[in-house]
Length: 240
Image (cartoon, rainbow, N blue to C red; front, top):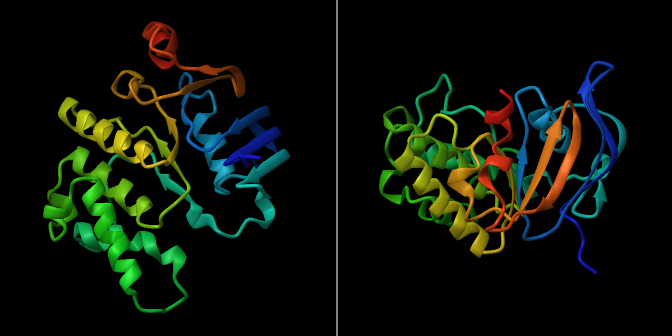
């Protein structure tokens, strides 16, 4: 029997004692490519932060790769590309250094990088098409290249699922096309994707399901087929 990558039952996530999302039931299966859509303030980012352990789960049950979230230790198996559009930090870094930081969760404290670490970083850079920019300062990259650097950082940990928050925001058309090609390649290799997005169109050929949140609750969860009207999916633009 296949084990879900993510399973939520009656979940509420919020801050303090105030829930932002409530009564969420959701199962993400291996191989799913899920678009999590909804208007601004609908709770999309809060929900994924709850799954990742970055926001408190106030009620319900969260299981990650078949284990209760509270006892799940292999957090590297959940890759995360955050909502910020660029790679920031107070210390100047090159692309390879940023991507290599994705291996830290898999290494013992203060241990030196291994051959496996170096190979994982090399492969991640190849996948996102930045092998030729590995020594480039991240500050010199375009917005799309910086997004791909963040994806490579998550991929370096060799996760089972990649959760991405607004990956196409602030990225020009050429960057969006490059990102879509990268994600298509990853899905072809068996990676499960959960994408929080306002922009369905750049990823239409890739997505297999759409889950819509409205006022903190799931109001739609259905397969995405070539016949599904784009206007029905572009929830944020329609409701903003």
